[in-house]
Length: 71
Image (cartoon, rainbow, N blue to C red; front, side, top):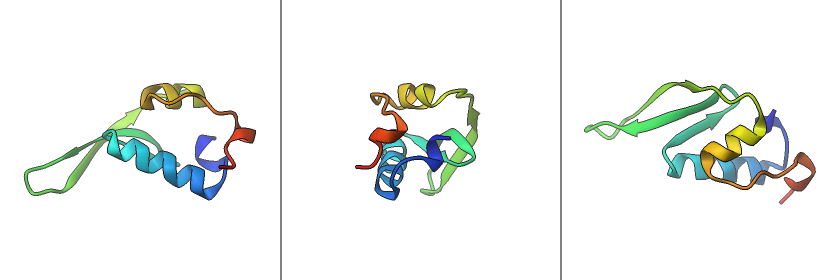
């Protein structure tokens, strides 16, 4: 649900923040990202998050309700 709520700017910002913290966030889920010696990224299986609040917690962000995601 998180992926489809809020403004485009909000969604891009959260995905970029996740990537900088070593995570990949997409409509498919949240997964860990690492870099190999050749500089390519390898993603592992999705981390189970059953609520939007869990995604925010994993990323270390304060939860924002959908109506607060327009910025």
